[in-house]
Length: 317
Image (cartoon, rainbow, N blue to C red):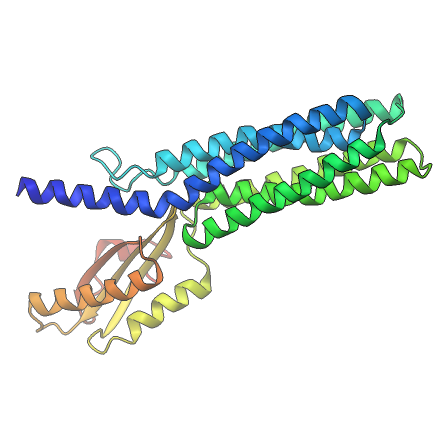
C-alpha cells in the first residue's frame, strides 16, 4: 500500500513537471533576453538621451523583474498537491500576474513623470543611428521571445507566462514607435514629440496592467470557464446514454489546471459498480479536453435534487 502511494506521488510529480517544462523554458528565455536588452538600451539611452529609448529601457527593466517573478511562480505552481494545499499550488500564478500588473503601473508612473519633466525642460536627442539600431535589435529579440512564449502557451496554459508574453508583445509596439519618433526627430520634428510618445507609452502600460490584473483576479475569484467551453463540457455529459440528467456544473482555473465538478443523475436501480463506470467514462471525456484537469463527479438517483448545495441561490444550474 505504501509503495502504491509513493508510486502515485512520483507519477503526479512527473506529470506536473512535464506539463510545466514549456513554461520553464519560456521563463529562462525571457530572463536572458531581457537582461541583454537592458544592457544595450542603457547604452543607447546614455548616448542619445532619447525618451523613446528610456520608455523602452524602463519597459525592459520591468520585464526582467517580471520574468524572474513569473519563472519563480511557475516553479512553485509545479509543486504537487500536499496535505496543506489539497488543490495544489497553481493559484500562485494569479498572485504573480497581479504583482506584475502593479509593477507595470509603477513603471508607467515613473515614465509619465519623466515625460512631463522633459516637456517642461526639453533636451536635444543625439546619436540617432545608434538608437535606431538598438531598437531594431530589440524588436527582433522580442519577436523571438514572444514566439517561444506562444509555443509554450500552446502546450501549457500558464497565466504567469501569458502575462509575461502580453507584456513582451507590447514591447514590439513600443520599440516600433520609438524608431518612428527617432526618425521624425532626425527630420527636424520638435523635441516635445519624444516626450509625448513616452506619455502615450505610460498610458498604454496602464491599460496593459489593467488587462493582466483582470485576468489574475478572475482566477483568484474562481470565475467560470467561458460559455463555449462550458458548452462543450455539457455536450459531453448529455451525449452519454446512461446519464438521465445533470446539475451543479462548476468550473474554474487553478493555475494551468482546470477544475470541473458536476452532479449527474442515473437510474435509481443502478448498482454502484455501473454508476462508477459511468463516472469513469465521463471523466475520460473531460480529460480529452483538459488533460491535467481535476474532475469531481457526484452521482444522484434520477430526479433527486435534495442536496444541501441546491439551496444556494444560483448554484443549481
